[in-house]
Length: 571
Image (cartoon, rainbow, N blue to C red; front, side, top):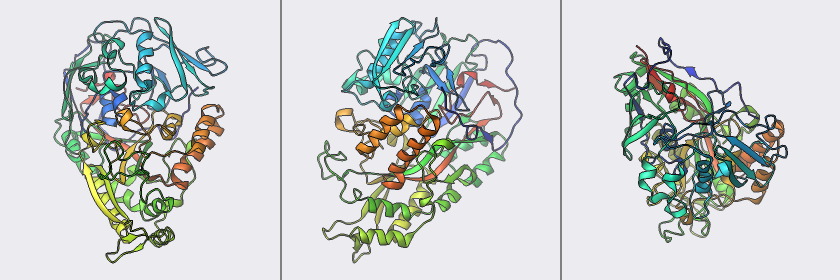
């Protein structure tokens, strides 16, 4: 049972270079060294403790799921021989369970066997009530996970699950080794530095050195299941800098072989491509640049354990009219023009693709400054002597607007600040190094999960082509809080029983068209109806690789590095 779009999974090359094809069976490590650069530097190699893309993707070279999605959004077997379905008996007819059978003979990089106990432990790790799992939504509806024998695992659901491919599927939910993480359950999880920085995996590479927020050194996994892979013996995975420097290092200087997430103005990127050292590749998927509204009070005057928690509602963003006015003031067409060109499209949706799940909401696409002012007047906020709006209780419309450090995002901030100040909202801009912002460190005040600002901007997406786990992030109780080590996906602290009831209905709905209707309704509740999430741009994923790197297949439905074992050097 898979959900696929034929329209949005195709990679479109922005420039072309001759490609050579790998020879037949050869030895592992035959092509020497490969250099990868992610200008957002990884800070941890455990995706259960960070939902930052740079952490998920770097760890995907080391630890792997049972199944993942290919470049077309199709579910493919990875550590199993086949995808369980009702037809082959892997999914129960009553849809209350799914049974996975591991491929025999698989081993961890330390040579020990991969068993069903590792899979069961992975679920226990993420679902531990005293822990803070960044990927908990992948386990939505799971009642229990049990080992039927050394290679067979059954996931039992607490309700019929027509789409049971949440747990252990995609780079967001890989299998971790029980022996390595046994003492890392619950509140202990962030303290297991060695396991979190050097996970033992089944993937093509193993970590030899990891300097958080800087560089990862890897070597080929000597126990990888294919003796001819990976073609590269060693990897340098460099983090930090900015998108422009990363692009230059591949497209102009040839210092690196692969650069991720080239969030650059289109004319700047095209100028680099013309240097002839590499090619830029782009594909649309589900990546949305958006502004998140904090429904809780981030004031530093509150005790740290209560700041940005549901105990203290936001003094003015709790009013839907204020959130809507902020959205109405934005010119999304102009943002696309200056930031992405053909690699972006203005959107009002959190879920822009696949088409069956995309709402027809276009209300936000027309900027309306005067309408925004009128809405703020209706909410009781009138201009003060300095032009900043204030209500009868003396509450000023003054926001801290944070995002990660990136040229395009800072351009967006500058424009949006101008529009918001035009409607009487004082706006302080803050940008944070991406390795910190997306790092998930529970001790840092600057993570996007902790959300110690009024609004923040970033982009993320969901794996595969069915958005159920993605929209489930906003279930009541999924918010980051001190008791979860500030991990959790519902960063806005949104809670609506009607929304949760629709999630439960979605989880039990098999009909594809009906699933689309429910997801569109959930999308509209978060965006059009409440303006808790303010979508800006449906972003195409843009990366680059050198002309001497072969085997790259851009994948917007899973980790971009999903097939790194198949990369090779072009002569």
